[in-house]
Structures are given as C-alpha cells and as structure tokens.
Length: 381
Image 1 (tube, rainbow, N blue to C red):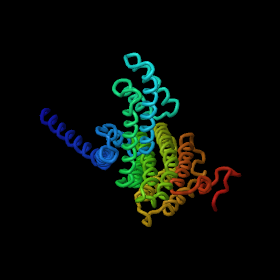
Image 2 (cartoon, rainbow, N blue to C red):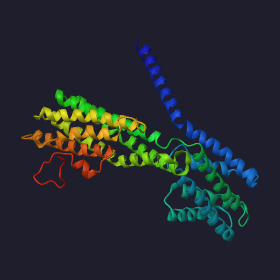
Image 3 (cartoon, rainbow, N blue to C red):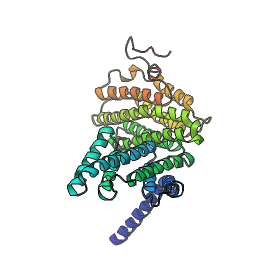
Image 4 (cartoon, helix red, strand yellow):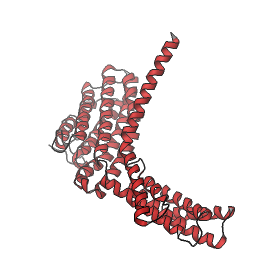
C-alpha cells in the first residue's frame, strides 16, 4: 500500500512539474522568439551589410540586450555597447604599453571594470567592460581594427535587438494588467479569509490569509518589471503608441497597490491577535472587511477590462466609496486595541484602493467619515 501511495504521489508531482514547465515556456515563448530572430538578423546585418567575416559578438549582443526579461531592454542595449567600448578602449590603451600576460590581464580587467563602475552602476556595463578587456589582452592585437569591429558588432546587435522589440513587440499593457489582476484577486481572497476568521472567531483562516498576503511581494515586483517593459515598448513600437495612457494609469496604481498589500498584512496580523485574545468585536466592522473583499474583486475585474468595458475606474471607485461611507468611529466605540488597529487599517486600505481606482490621495481621504472634530481634509458630504 505504501509503495502504491508513493507511486501515486510521484505521478502527481510529475504532472505538476510538467504543467509548471509548460507554463514557464508559454510565458517565455515570445521573448525566446524575439531573441532567436534578433540573433539571426544581427548576424546577417553584420556579415552581409557591414561585411565582417565572423561577427560572433553581433548575435551575442542581440541576445544579451533582449534576454528573457521584458523590462529595461533599451538600457541593457546601451549598457552592453558602452561596456564593450570602455573595455576595448582601456584594454587597447594599457596592453599597447605593458603587453600581454598574467599580471597584465589582471590589471586590465581591474581598470576596465573600475572605469565602468565609476561611469554606470549597471551590471551588464561592468561585465562587458571586463570581458572586452580580456579579449583585447589575449586575442585582439592592440592598435588593430579588431577592437573597433567588435564595437561595431556590439552596436549592430543592440540596434537589431531594439528593432525586433519594435516590430515584434509584446503587448505593453497585457502582462502588467494580468499581474495586477492576480495581485488584486489574491488580496480579495485574503480579506475574505480574514472576515471568515473574525466571524467564526477562528485563527486558522486568518493564518492562511497571512501566508497568502506575505507571498504577494514577488508579484508586485514582477508587475513593476512589466510596467517598465511596457513603457519601453510603448516608446519604441509605433504599433503601441496608443497604449501610453493605459500604462500611465497602471503605473500610477502600482504604488497604492503595494501600500494596500502592506496594510492588508498588518490588518491580518492584528486580526489574528484579536481572535487569539478573544477580543470583543463589532459585527459591523467585520461586514466592512467582507465588503472590502468584494470591492477588491471589482478592482480585479477592472484591471482585466478592456477600454470601454465594465467595471471601469468610475464603477470601482463607486463601490469603494460605499465601503468608505460606513467606516465611522462608532464601529470601535469602547473597543480594544486590536479592533481599533483593524479599523484604522481598513480605513488606510480603503484610501489605497481608491487611488488604485484612479482617485488622488486627498480625494480618497475625503471619502472617509471624520474621526476628529477638525480633519486635515474636509470630508465629502
């Protein structure tokens, strides 16, 4: 029986592993195609158009400048070409004076990489400077044209890579909004689990919610990467110049979304303390937690909606305003510390989410009922 169970578990793990691998390939399919086309095109341009007999660095530069990451490709191209130029320049100058050898290679690489670090903090810049310095110190004759040819090949590869991104681009908004929707969906699940735990006075759902909330930072970081890549594509690809407005709205939502997740983590931790301390809680406050879970689902749908579809930002803001209007100080009258903290976190979270829905921070704060006699921002009536 044990061997049968072990075999069944191995089959399940194998299927899960295959699905994960297939998903990775689907996500990377277009970047791989772009790299492959760029490598071939760079070789063709360098050999046929420019006339270099073996321009090995042109396809290498094209692949390095693109990579599988969709962000900062233009910067990678610039760093690569600049790094090659610095490395060959420093290497050629030093080797022509001191010659080649063990200690000469050590000195040339140290000087080339130091110069690169002083000029730019990019890792590709300094690595290419070091690589190029090694090439000059070992293979390329100082003072010859081979170093210049390599610089031309690097420039060719970088430019071809940029051209491929412009002509065969990924959608600059698509991936970013999917990641934003995934994060919002997870946040909705977390808030619903917190609400379930508070209703049942059970810490297990809240523990699960906290684990989910803590795992969201990687998705936020990936979202920012895709936003950076999307902005780059929208600048260099005429096919997607019309997406700049949507990208600006998504970019503006990234920081409030990050802040919202941080507030959700604090809310979940304090809710866990509240349940474990068996603190008395106003049921209407739990209702507000559940309403926010539903509002987050509306935001998730908003992130996935195409222009003109519902729910849009106005609809999401309307739903969140209805939540904000119920966040009155009376919900925590005579409440303990944990309940008060949960109340404060819900208010902060609502402000963050209203900003995700397109409101300015001051306007978002003004949707909340006042908690003091003279609030800094006049509340909406």
